[in-house]
Length: 340
Image (cartoon, rainbow, N blue to C red; front, side, top):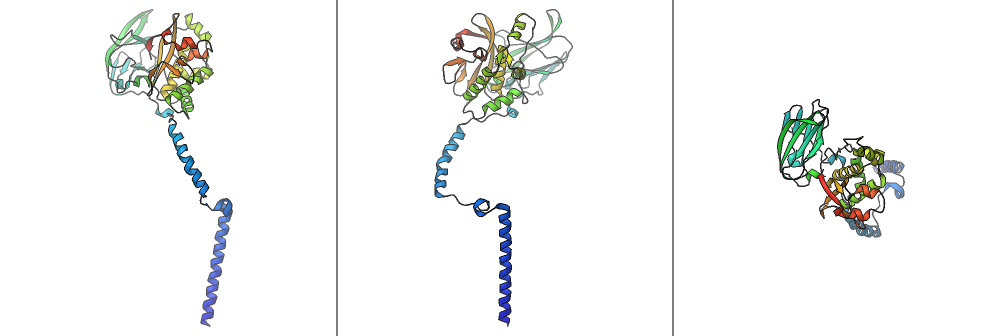
């Protein structure tokens, strides 16, 4: 009798176990579908394993060849520091001279204020119109190491100016190309610039810096047209002070040579590719702006090959259409006066 009770208990326990197992199986099937469709992860077949072994190195090698795009948050953004000289409503911040730039702020009331930056014995002085209203302007030390003279002058009457402040800045660059990576008054951009976001987008999937240069160059010459009306206004003296606005150039799809060069320079610098905005004369006495770029493989280059003949980095003339290739490709047609 006792043996019979043990057998009944055993059968009851077995029945409970089977019911519990059935319930678990129902829950698994309801959540994940059948074993064949979703519930079970099957091991790879020998053929799948062999295919993965063959494709993995190629995929890794392909990814390794791609250049990592620079995000807008990682551009070379200028900032003020603790080394400042203040006088007569002018503040000159030289904290980052070793990084290739200084900053100047004007808080006075003069209708026009000029900053003159020169490197004695180098070339002609560079004159810039300062922004009024207490905004910082950035100026890059494009002529390398040495002592720079900085003078700020207020317009008092007609063409008469009075000196407000004079100082000297000793520059020893931490890296020689830093002045051509930061924004400045003419190549003005920041992390929120539309041009910076576009540069990062165009750099996606690029294999090298030169590939980024090609993509940016071709986008600009394919999407920006020359603004003849603005050029005529400047030539006629109707516009006497002009500073490029790179996002405006993108939004309107129009610009003069200064705009083309400033836009391309900004987009390349945003991708940590050193670029120089060069202003000077081309054959025939035309005042003009163009650019040159630097890559680790080539150093500074005035001409870049994009699968065809080498061409000077002149986005304005390139956007004008065929017929200027020979002129653009000949660097002797260009004489620079200013580097920005």
